[in-house]
Amino acid sequence: MLIDLHVHSTVSSCSSLSVWEILGNARSLGLDGVCITDHDSTSVLAQIREGFQPDGLLVLAGMEYATPQGDFLVFGPVERLCPGLDGARLLETVDRLGGAVVAAHPFRSWRPSDVAVLERGPCLIEVENGRNTDAENALAAGLADRLGVHAVSGSDAHTLGELGRLPTRFDAPVRCRADLVRALRRGLCQPLRAPLAAAI
Image 1 (cartoon, rainbow, N blue to C red):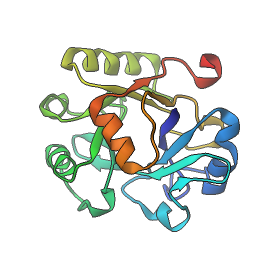
Image 2 (cartoon, one colour):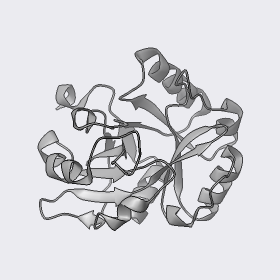
Image 3 (cartoon, rainbow, N blue to C red):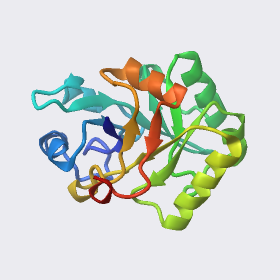
């Protein structure tokens, strides 16, 4: 399955990508699923029905959670997260809740992650981000290799033109949030190293 794990709807003030554009275009872009990961919010749940849509697209909600130590994609029961956690506390809390955490674009020049937090884990690393430079992605891939942690890719879509550029390939079926978390935690996934159009 190809799932874009990092998609922002208009719930994120920086995104112009509506829920209806996501739902109406994801399958034709080659995606089997999307996770809508708005900034510090799961308000998109008021606009979507999680699960498989009539066209077969899997739609799930996650969140991009901002901390002073960097931004993290969180999956699982994320509605229960308190605001204002620091990076280490976020990782501990999501792990305790049975979720999964991904360090989002950890080497983005204007929003880097604190590597010390990632070293303590548990955390996956987004090694290919559709809005990063090649150099930033290469640094993230090198860190994942050094730490021996699982890696994913994500488009970080804020516009329709960015949707689905760098999905993650899952080696196990994903039907719901619990399946997604299980696959992420077990590393049953692989990042795409090139945009989807070139990989198909």
